[in-house]
Image 1 (cartoon, rainbow, N blue to C red):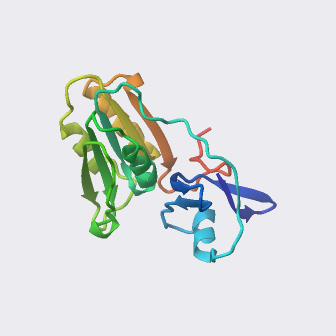
Image 2: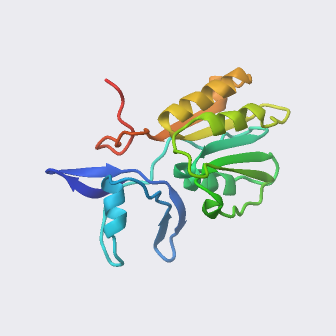
Length: 199
C-alpha cells in the first residue's frame, strides 16, 4: 500500500500488487494501470526517478489453493500483476487457465512459468472497461478440467460479482473461488485504497 498523494490534509492510500521483487538489488516492480485523474494517476504522471514514496506491506488475502487439481484466473488489466505473479508461481503439474481482458493486443504480455498454463486474451477494442459481458461469456464456455479446482477473480467490483455468479452456475462452491474487487466503474476508490462500499 502506497501513500501516493494528499487529499486535503489526509494521505491517500492506493494498493498495488507486487509483480516482482529482487531483494539483492532492492528492486520492487509494480504494474500500474493508467486511467482517469485520480490520486494514483496523478502520482504516476508526476513521478520521476529518485522520488521517494511511503508504503507498507506487502500483504494480501488471496493465495494459491494448495492441493487444487486445476486453477482458473480471470480479470481485467488491473489484475494482470496479481494473475501473472500467481500463475508464474505455480509448480509443474496442475493445469491452469488465465483469461484476461485488456484494451487491445498491445496490452498483452508474456507469462513465464514452469506450469502448464493456457492464456487467453480478450480485447475490448475501444469498448468501456468494467463491463461483465466479455469475461462472463469466456468463463461460461471455458472447459473445466476434471477434479476439484480453484478460481481466482479480480477486477471491477460488479464484474467480479457477475463472474462469481457464472462460476456458481457452473457448480463451483464458494470455497473454490477467491475474489477481489480492485476498482468500481465510475467511482474513485476510498481513501483506504479499495473500492468504496455502498452504505
